[in-house]
Image (cartoon, rainbow, N blue to C red; front, top):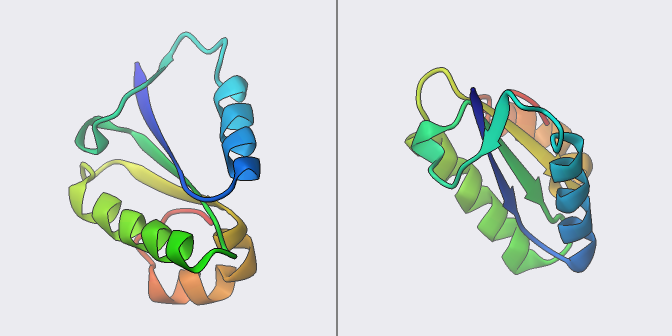
Length: 99
């Protein structure tokens, strides 16, 4: 069974987007959601790119996940931060698998 963590940062729209992401996996019996980053196969971080404190919190979370994940885990960064600053993030944080 694949284990996924979903971390949400930012506004109410991000919360709705995260709930939609959860819904995509709803009927998948081979997937379960967990809270421990060190146990995940996939870490999804839904970010905010507008609220300064949320941007910093998202960046801190990305680096925390990079340092805490198991070697085979993948990190996917979604949301406004990933959309607005994709090129810069790809260059500065190559450890992330997908923006």
